[in-house]
Amino acid sequence: MKLINNLRRWKADQRGTATVEMGLTLPLLFLMMFPPMEFARYTFADRTLRDSVNEGAKFAALTLTLPGSTVTEDDVRDIVIQKAGGYAPARDAINITYSPAKVPGARVTVTASADFGEIFEVFGDLTHQVDGTRTLF
Image (cartoon, rainbow, N blue to C red; front, side, top):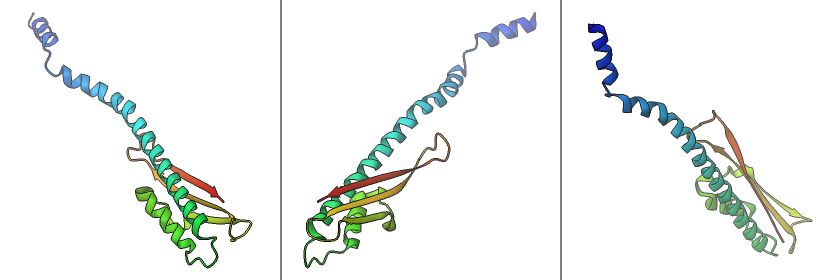
């Protein structure tokens, strides 16, 4: 009889149920919350790099092909790195090409790529490339 009374008392006791419920639902909440945050960060990094490459291409098209210009390709790389902020690519990952040659009116293409690492690593250790290309006349 004493065992049955103890089981009834234990069954009626509600202490700790909120903790158990939170422990069961919190991982699911994190799995639903963090991937969209990572996607938003990736989208922001991609847009930031594309904008910085666009600024570099505009600067290059307006200055590098002018006769007697003292602007160098390193100046264009500095513009891209400065505009990219925290998502800046490495200096050697920024390429500047001219078509047909470095003459006034030439087509200028600036490309850059940077590594994007996840903060939360929800899906393991993944790294992504963020690429940007811009061509101007």
